[in-house]
Length: 151
Ligand SMILES: [Cu+2]
Image 1 (tube, rainbow, N blue to C red):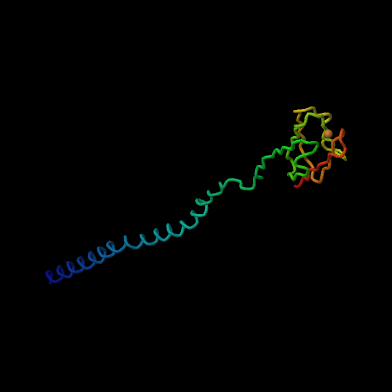
Image 2: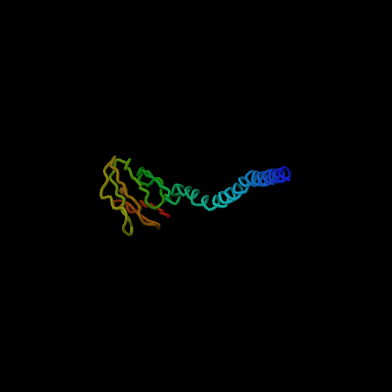
């Protein structure tokens, strides 16, 4: 009787011990997927705040720099050459008297007013308004010219 009881106890110990061994062996594998699921679930939340950097594009809305142009008109043979010239607002016209006689650049309705330009003299005027500016020589009124200023 004692041997059979001892054998039953041994078998019971082996079974119970094996049961806990098996439980101990399987337990560690269960928490792993849980923690990995939490990590993968948090990544999408962190990504947007980490990728809000690319806002450093240079301001492309700065107005393009338009360099004013200077045009030359010669006064020669008692005439303005060229007689009519087209410019942009902000451009400058320079008249040069290439005659031996004196001339003027005088706006019909304001604008350029050179006074007397002796031979070789120059006069420059910057047109900051748009429109057609007719002018003449005050000494020789038949000498006429015009500057057409557009935006
Ligand atoms: Cu003149």
